[in-house]
Image 1 (cartoon, rainbow, N blue to C red):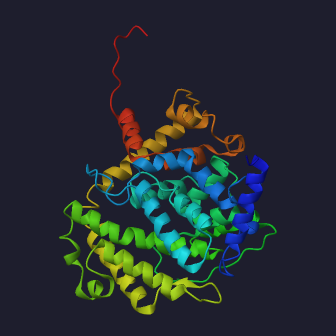
Image 2 (cartoon, helix red, strand yellow):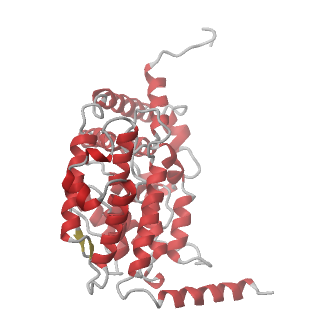
Image 3 (tube, rainbow, N blue to C red):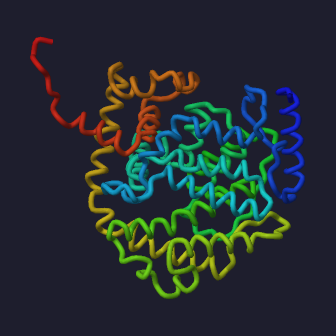
Length: 390
């Protein structure tokens, strides 16, 4: 019978042989950098271990009830974040396998890339960001919040490469090619903090690894066609036939065809790049930008999609104000204490250093849509009692 040490040695030897076949631009296990490196590496590669840590995080569990585009529709067939990140992971690993990149790193970045998303999607992010600016704690961006959840709030000691990929994902960008910007190993985490500040100020961040670039484009591939399918499901558009002819001619007639053409073009256009450049061909890239504009006009900014925005904004104002008052008044039975600040999984360093406004921001950012709605109702509805004796 093989001993645990022999199994570990055998597995590591296999991983080394596998990585010897990677592209010269791929990120190796030996490149991995951790902030603390508290635990000895085991049979998993460093990035595979990161993927497991993300899967077991509290933040990942909350993906299940975070919506993508349609937050206020009762339809079990529309996409939630938990499905979206799985689609991104699948597409990323398919592309990465073709380009001989590190699939473990691709999976970890893909699974964690939307951790920072908050209730009610991108509009919820706008609402929370405006409140944060007013409170003097800067703008709110979900990519930065994703890094904070995993690195600071839950303190999972993920590798710099994974955190960098999460920070630099940007499915809204119209960039159609990316060249990784390598980060020096020395002071990598100080540079990560600098890049978070730059991203908060509005600077576009380019991933430091080709794997991060692949996830960024895979994010777009995963949502762009799926949003069309969801919009059809809820009756916002009349199917993929609603697309302009030039887009359908370039990208396809349905969800599967669009995903397939974008994925194959990304692989073909990126193959053989000496500098590790990842991107689409000019023709497909231009068609993708036109498709993004179509989705923006016909789905994301459709009057029906935006019809309840004023109500949602009021909800965010009420929830933030009430929680901040509870925190400052030390109302220990408030949800911000019982469900967040007093929980055993929270980092002690975070608990000791966070400001009241920052704590409220982070608590709200971690909420699912359903939790946020229940909390709001508990704040605005009158309380019922059995008697007035107590």
